[in-house]
Amino acid sequence: MSVFTSAEIAYLGSQRLGRIATVGRAGEPHAVPVGYRYNAAEDAIDIGGHGFAKSKKFRDAQHNPRVAFVVDDLASVSPWRPRGIEVRGIALVLDSGGEAFGRGYDPQIFRVRPRRIVSWGLEGERRSATVRP
Image 1 (tube, one colour):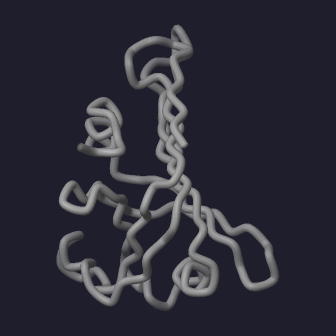
Image 2: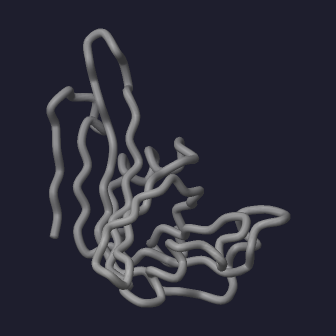
Image 3: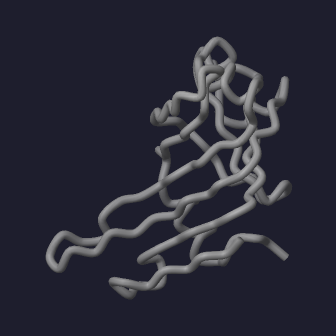
């Protein structure tokens, strides 16, 4: 059984770009857009990219694995209907797995294991929100 709802999994599969927030050595937050994929076998979010192992976010996760990941968009503008998901968790820094993203991606990734999930607007209702520790 997944920690994600079926609506959350469907939404994650429908999008391609998210944002990851990490914390640097000096305690400063760092948020950047990233490519990702929902890893059903691990029930986690895999994050990787080109030049990923040399990035600040990768170094941050090696030092402090606590991260937040967000995917959001507008289901409609009129009426205004935002939807999205926030996943807070622990980033496991891995030396392989990036091959699953496609040719040219670094093999290194980090895998976000959810500890808290907040989603909104995924069930078709404007103000619906789901929060799970």
